[in-house]
Image (tube, rainbow, N blue to C red; front, side):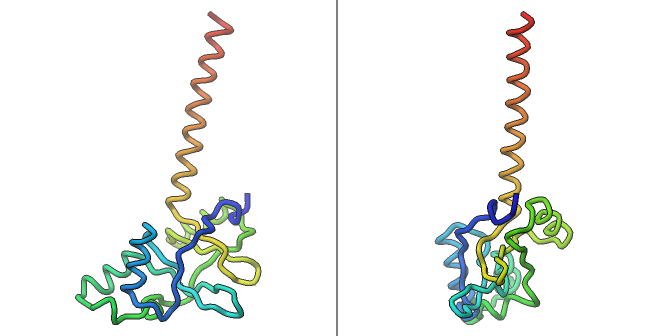
Length: 149
């Protein structure tokens, strides 16, 4: 299955000029631990970084820096890692694990943001699959009891 079919398409975003305080308020309002920082280019949302609650705590709160005076763009560093919406679910997980990313913006062929996939999404999928396996065991036992009383 392509990651574009699995990812969460409701992504909380902010521009580089948003303050860290505004980003933290978005996280609280949407009950998420990260916000994708984007540039808008010709109407397309191009990811430039992912700002997490941990980033804000470690970079600002722990250093007693006022979050309203720091721009989101100043907190995201380097090139953002993204994954194509056509990449497979397993390949995406492998890439995330290999690079130590808990969250990964998903982009289309033009590099525009279409979604995000997180470690939590994979844990939910795994729990669902394990639940189905447990149901299979129960079903098999039930059928055997009917066939071989």
